[in-house]
Image (cartoon, rainbow, N blue to C red; front, side):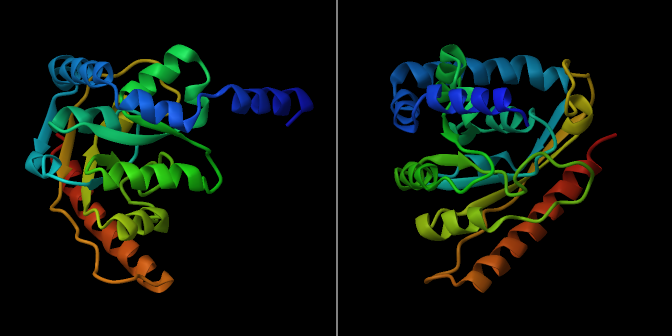
Length: 237
């Protein structure tokens, strides 16, 4: 990477809206109203265009703090899950989305908070814990970045750690068909069949969790996630 590119990225870091700003915007009444408008558009337009089938949507509407843990094959995954449930989803978004003022407001209004990609952002994790402690629902992709194919990649322990600290149950969600609808690099959404299967909540073990216990719990989540992903793929014609 050249010096000019490094300088540009550093500039973006400096100019990005703060995490506190994003949290404050996310709590505004106008943000919740905007979220409902966007969710309505997703249900009326996107669901019909993608012929979305949903199973287990009731698990997206359980009360209290919840971590939604979906497979990740496309940028369509989070919007479709938001459309399938009635509760508002909060999320961690890459920091570069919070540089442009308009993009920053849209992301914050939709419930996202900035996260530094590729490093442990303790400040963002603390904010995520605060959001969950407030009884909200947060989406965390357990595979990390977008993956490809029918196999669930390794589940990272950061999500399990977050669940252990907040006692929030983890709801596994398999989303199938989105990789064909909007693959990485695509500019348009192709019309195809998609399916969402929401599994039953996975409760966090009682007591303090050691590193091996966190890893074992992550493996359990990965297994449950693979099961709902397989079911979702079986619904695709």
